Length: 338
Ligand code: KG4
Image (tube, rainbow, N blue to C red; front, side, top):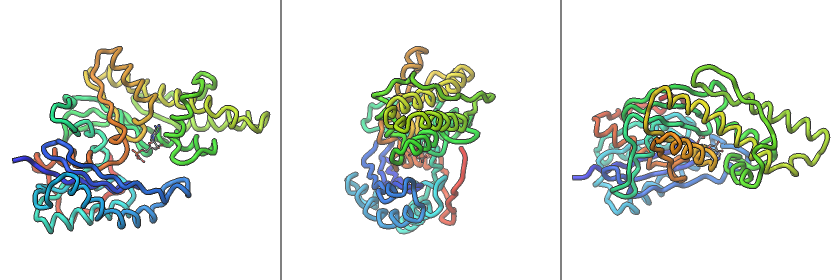
């Protein structure tokens, strides 16, 4: 008998539901919310309302696409946090209601564990998955962490940002350039036509395996300010070079500490996860590092880098198999760490 898990994700501005059967992905439906684009960032109240509208059709569609019946579901996994409280409440309440109705166990999932374990989503039975222990570079809009994954249920943060996350560095610098939100993907596209050596931005000197991106942000701002004084069209004329130089600096900062962590731990397998792992330069740098050091690298498909329920279903599957279930009274958490 196979184990069928329904995963539900609603931590930010994507409503998603997925079905996995013994780790094999049967469906992954994502409704992205366009309503925030006009505001240059996610508006929490609008996100909650959109989740409320989306949740029933998204879950129904995931069940339909998977070709199963509701009664076939063995457990329901949901994102308990971190995320926006209102958004989390929608997914959490829905998961609880459905678990009670179907009389199946409920599994609470840390959203960050989902990103780290996304490499276990199999779309074909023979798809390779990482061996433990592995080192994961988790880079998103809210986190930049180096995580030692000892097993599916045991993870240690070896280093993390002391201020902004890598995604924030992309988004905030893009914003001051007048680019649309989220800036990360736009910078990625622009960078392809630019010279990454044209501008030099500050790199942090902080101890251990921690990150910092606030100095880079400030030096990016100063570069714009000083040059605009001389040439009002500076940004427009140098868009691609600015994007390429910014992207290169972020990648250098990320790879410097990640490489140190690989040496320190002696792991043979590395991985990346989170929204910023969709970035072409980050992906290329990790693949290149693995090739040069004879390591195995797991680089997620782009659809599994941003918020999706497939990763929540997979992380939930591990917990379900370990007998780790949660009570229907469990509240969502807006802030949690690994
Ligand atoms: O994991 P995620 O979907 O959610 C949050 O933690 O919020 O990550 C979103 C972040 C944003 O900062 C976005 O700009 C960034 O991921 N991002 C990218 C790319 N695609 C998404 N950053 C750089 N290059 C990309 N291609």
